[in-house]
Image (cartoon, rainbow, N blue to C red; front, side, top):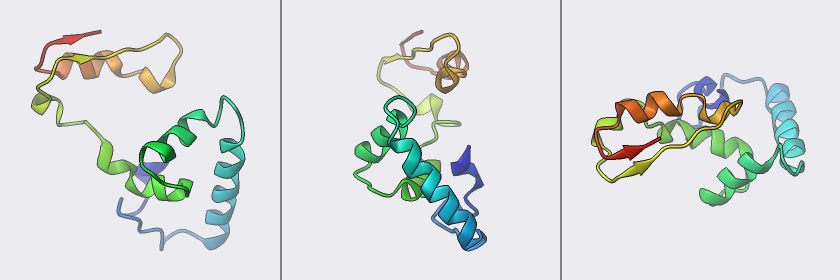
Length: 103
């Protein structure tokens, strides 16, 4: 959700108050220290070879499959779990795929 709030999706944080950015940075760094709650953020930083959580949110909008489902050609396994916010739209995504898929 935060990634969608970046003004231009390309690192344009100019519209953000410096104090608000500092608070956000500290909140993200605190979250990263938590074993379970910080796992997804630490994983995303690792995958993209980043150290700054804000940098991840600057580039995250580039990694949105919405509108690209029809160009995915390889067989795809899409999974979801009850009560898992990250996979809430897994079924909808799988339905839009044109490739062989399993949900």
